[in-house]
Image (tube, rainbow, N blue to C red; front, top):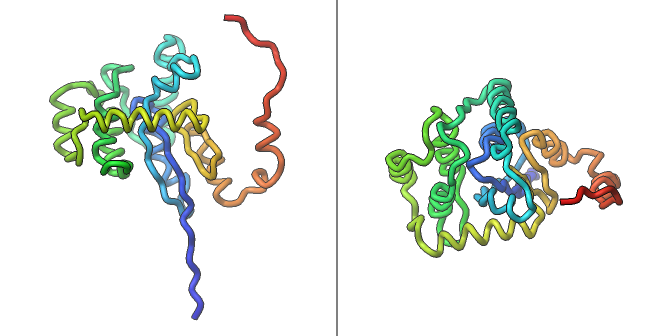
Length: 221
């Protein structure tokens, strides 16, 4: 009797837990990609590093955009059946949580889904202060990191991951990378699913054609 072996498609999920869209995409991904054979690698990176590199401001740094973002995020959570509560303080410094995630993996490795889930839900459930020292200490106890989150090696690993993401062209979070192609945001999940299912659009010239640089007016600083 002949058996068929299904090869799992490697997928990289670049994210910073400070992003509500990263949380929503993380929670919704199993449903959105249901039935597809994938192997997900979770890569924590510093969103502020992306913003600085590309000369952007975060959504929470522009007041009307901040108000819209959290209204939209709350609606999206209700729409997809995902609990999401805006934390008491946002934006906040996510470095301690990012380093904790890095420290949950062995040297040179990446955190598993459970560790990512605990950190994301620490921020995005309950509407509490994600930076509260007592809450962070309890989170660290639950995660039982393999390395010291404050070590030079962990700090460097986060810098290296962010630099690698930038080198690959990542400009926002969450970004899903498959076969060197980048898909940005929660609303890209249907596009990811179509690609993984061999959607015809990807076999044609549109991906390269629509991503090509074009001449246009540039706004002066």
